[in-house]
Each structure stands twice: as structure tokens, then as C-alpha cells.
Length: 132
Image (cartoon, rainbow, N blue to C red; front, side, top):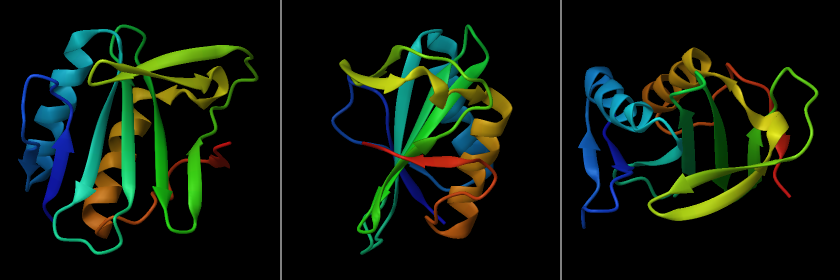
């Protein structure tokens, strides 16, 4: 299943990701930035038009996920009871999330691979909460 990956604000086109290795390379680039960054993934040619945001914070070894489709919007629910707000950057635009959305980076990667292999379904390997 091929994905479009939007993450580079210096590119007019998304990266086309066709293999798990290519997905890892895109995520590795964002992890390497060190700050909280979002890679948006879309299934190529999908009429559902689900949006899957993969947030990574390489320096801290955590990340977050957000998913939206015609049925609603969700973000991950982390295991820690933390309060406050955090910012994730998507192509030079900051988006605010509650701090309890962060999960371990290896789980973020696992969910991204599940999204790819399932053809764009909301991953089941993480806990979700409605995004308000």
C-alpha cells in the first residue's frame, strides 16, 4: 500500500512511500530533527481521505498520533497522567495537543506500519481518545 508523506516544508510534493523501509526512512528524517514534528500520511488513491498524523519527538524518544476520517477525530492516549499543553510542528505550523497524548516512539512506529499495512485503517496497537 503506497502512502503520501507530507513532512518537508521545503518540498512542493509529498514523498511517496511504498515499502516499510521507505516509511522508516521518512520517520527517521523527522526523528533526526529532534523537536516535536508531525508527518502526515495519506493512502494514495483512497476515496476515504483519512488523515493520519505521526508525531515524533526524537530527543525525548516519544511521539503521538492523530487520526481523522468521516467518523471523527482522535489522538493517542498516553499511559501517564500528565497535564498541560505541548506543541507539535507540521511544516512550520504549530499544533497544540494535551500532554497526555505522548507514547513511546517504538509504539508510534508500530502504529505507522499498521496504518500502512491495513490500507489506512486507524491503528489498533495504541489507545485513542476523541480529539476536541
